[in-house]
Image (cartoon, rainbow, N blue to C red; front, side):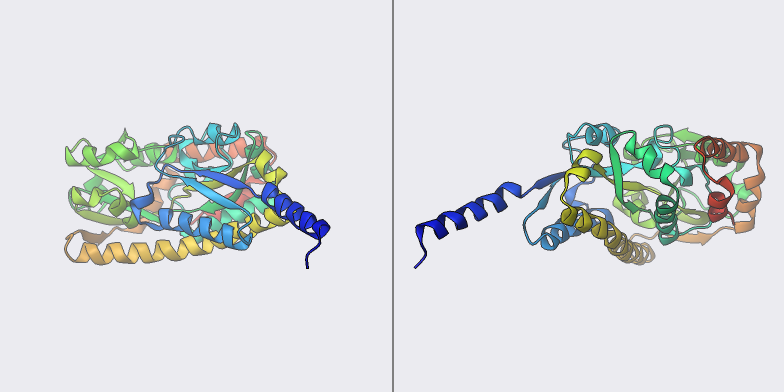
Length: 334
């Protein structure tokens, strides 16, 4: 028979376990019902975190920008409004220039796995990448590289000559310079406004990958996808408030660190499946024509003064931070 003392001790152990349990909040602009690699991999992350902490801790998702809009997420995480969240790195090239290296080097030869691998390597090798985030009370526990980008257009494009005078959706640093070098006109438009811009012919084309094009339904109003080799876009940091991360016990922190590594593999698997599904749809009912583009024509304009100036701007910032620029840039050269 359990003694009173044993019962009290058991109750205290149970109370302590409950008291130490944590529910971490995760904020994202992605709608839960998107049913794409981004949304599905986040749901996987939630389930795996609870499983790997044996149910002691869990992550509560706040979907669809319900806590912070995409442009507000870094500040929301830094201030502790959320514990974890998605930071769309290309939207913050001035705030996180080192971690946005890929955004200054378009076109580049890396695919999604290559970009994610480069980010992992740079963070492991050069402390400046983590220090840049730490200045804003942030820590990256994983990376979400997007797919290879091409151009989704309203008309067929077969060569550089066909791009002359076209209006192309633009953002960040590299794309405006690259688009001008191609003889086209960059038009700065948000992701959410691009569908209408394509529909109303405010823009003729938008750089994007197949899975994202389907996710935003751009392929309803633009039916020509050109395999122009921009390379994969970096995409997103999976960030955690640095105070939250440091306050985790060693075991929980180790779970999150390993989960971040495993997340990239799972997300990559989902992204590959997503892209295949979309390409099958394009070849069928959606009737999107996919054509190739002469890669040598795009590679040639890397020497354009405007494109070079963007790359040199990043190199100057990296040198000022004490980074070995040539070692890093070598990963991004054809």
